[in-house]
Amino acid sequence: MHLLCGLGNKGSDYTFTRHNIGYLVIERFSERFKIPVTKKDSGCRIGLKEDLVLAKPDTYMNLSGGPVARLVGKFKVSPDHVIIIHDDLDMDFGKMRIRLGGRDGGHKGVRSVIENLGTADFYRLKIGIGRHPGIPAEEYVLSRFPGEETEGLAEIIDVACDALKVFVFEGGSKAMSLFNRRGPE
Image 1: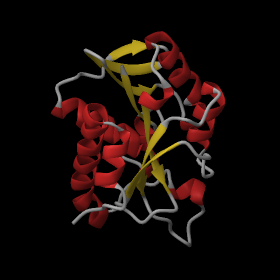
Image 2: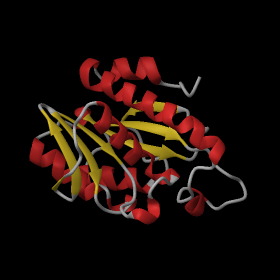
Image 3: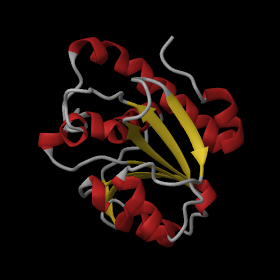
Image 4: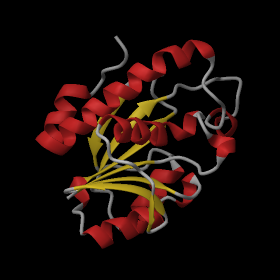
């Protein structure tokens, strides 16, 4: 069993913001592989297909850990079969990195997941959103993508979906070797 979970903030005010890139990736993966993410379960919107659970916590980013931990428990998912998809301020826009374990890197959603799971030994797919020196981080992550970034966003999300497919079918190590440090061409 694998759990692919995109982090974001619930509600229409946050749709298409930088902090919701995890939601965007899960939505695209759902479309590509025809796994509707519509069922409510354990505080998430989920989609199920065979041994795969897609999830978007139906909460605010900083409270994501509780719903993720409930899904892990309900579906008996091993932490090394969990991948959390989230934004990363400290990576250039469009770059991505898959890693197993480590600290939260200042990301409060990831921190919540670590605290609620009681372990950091799960995978993360971090997608760079860049950082704007003139805008406080709290405001920047809640801003929408400008036109020039929107044009490349579809490709970034598609590459993230490709990485998730490899994660599920070939494992985390293979996904890391193929997709780390890769951004839009």
